[in-house]
Length: 385
Image 1 (spheres, rainbow, N blue to C red):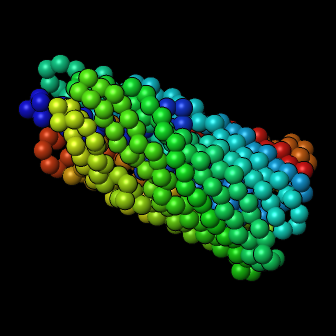
Image 2: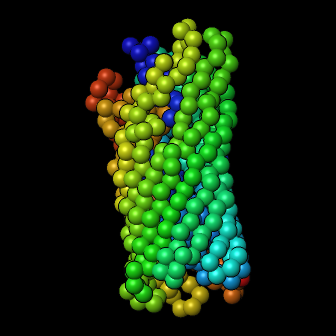
Image 3: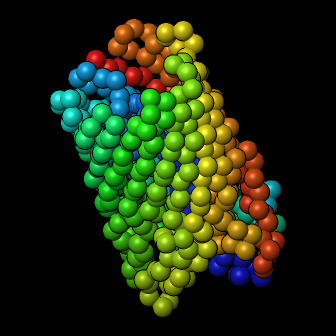
């Protein structure tokens, strides 16, 4: 029984994801990258408001009210209390920096670049089971993206944009059976988007991000070389923004994240004597995310925001035992945000996200229970002229 539990623990490890850019909000994907985006619960595809739109919907760069340039720099702090069978994970504070810049070349063309942690999660359990010996599980993984791109205003109503995504991914795994030290790979993908003004009050946005093609992780072990590939999921998002009055903005987005294509199972190439399974059957399903954000101008120098984001966990009860190191089960998020304009060029923003506690208990094999909730605080400084 103990050996069986160890094998399940080994199979669970690869999906752990934290490090400096931790996430695990919609599955393992970031809800938003900046305080403004998080304050709107990630509903920013149709009416982007900061330079970090280059990472979400690059066409949005054409919609920003800038003359020459806009800079957005921010940092977030994630507190994700996690449990397996009542055992708490350590390392419960993570820092998440992000930044972007947009340059208005002329009335039609805007160039930009953004960078930030796009996905992440992870655990540091000293024990995960009421059994003899510590069944420790320690995982760290991060996906960091640098995205140069452009936005082109086709007409007063339509803007198009695209980026090339240059990705960095890091992974480390440790458990009673083996330890694979921190390793890094690079990869690439692309993002394309559009913003279409339907009327003076309605605006439609759409964005598509390709599968992020990553190189193979390779580790040299006593049994020989172990390797695996972990690509990032394709995403597609559609948003509708409504301005019922000059000082109000309401946006609703729907997004599909194709986890099933990349995290249903992962093939491992390894020697026959290796303790690592040949196939890691995580069983993740595609996730559909619904987000709504509301923004109100308070005078000429302040905006307040609130939002709600929901996505059914990509992990089902039947997959709990294969995901003890990847507790991506939160579903409901409530968000609050505020922006204060300090001068004509400088503003500051803050946001708070609470992901409500969710737990899953396995309905096959050992009745393991995984549990997660989250608190995220973001700060942002913006400069434009």
